[in-house]
Image (cartoon, rainbow, N blue to C red; front, side, top):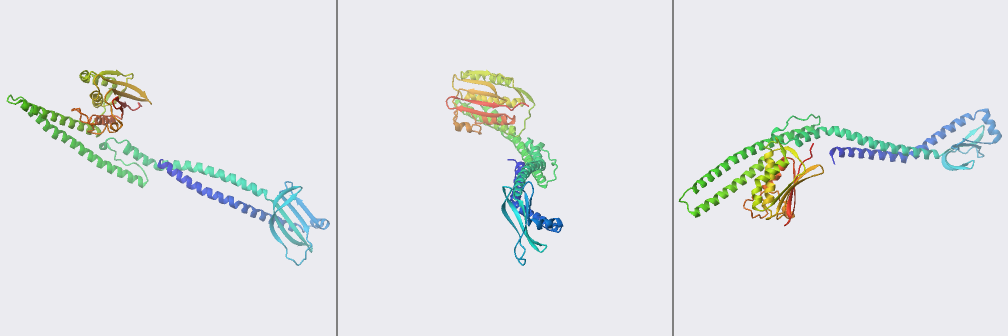
Length: 440
């Protein structure tokens, strides 16, 4: 999961937790708050009603009927006024209660204020009631409102956090893209700092630049070492090779001596081949080659066939070419020729007499694939897994095998952005699948 999304989710979950806690607190407290509100309103109504009892009209009504009852049409409120026959010396009662009352056949739960007062030398009990259904409705309204607020807060928080974290982390991704992903050659590294106001990103940018500077120094040192190795190793080998060949021209040289010199020459050629292979791998992996050529697959395949035709005839192998696509890509033609030469050479070298080598193509998932298939001795699973390791020959008895052919193939393929897969079965054969990148 990306850091940007993690930050957004963390902020969102934190805020959701806070809002949820506050919402639950509101729901728990709303009943008590509503009851207090109703009681306060009933108390105000009582004061207003008692203040109006001084009018002659209300006084006459109380004198004639003894008891006065009133309620609104929705039965949400009611008023009962009646005379109390208690002693005038007792304390006036004033309290709240929650009870059920039946108004015109409908029973409801009410919050009731019972208040006694004296008027005109008489004692009266005023009962004011307000239905509790409004509290339930209020709780439901607040619950829905709280849920909607929570949902909107989650969405808005996630969107704003994503937008802010994207803005905040933009320099970080720019550093990764420009200073790591797009860097193929440490020598051409861009040391210009990425613009950012975040100190952490500035430190990261500076650290990468310092690291790349060290890598560039090591890269130059390695290039220099490769150049020195090429000269210091290959030159003595060439001199020894020339001297041994001159010794062969000596007429006094015995037959046994000739055999020994031939063995030495063979060893020198083997050493020279190994050094050249290692130098090739090193140069390819260090990007010391360019990609200036337009490579046509069919042309390279036919060139490889012409160069190896004599070996095919020696082993009586059939060579089948079936390419349906004219695939073209940009790269280094010489290196790709070496790649194909090594793959086809292995298909010939480890084949069985009177067998076959087939080269065909296919397009799978928009990737052009070139397949080289043989009917040779094949490899088991363990050998396939280690096929690209250097000097891995799997106890091959071939004298010209150095165990570097597939290492060269892998290095050249990586240089061109090509993938290599091997499918093999013991005693049945091997096929090497060369998968080219998608065309833009």
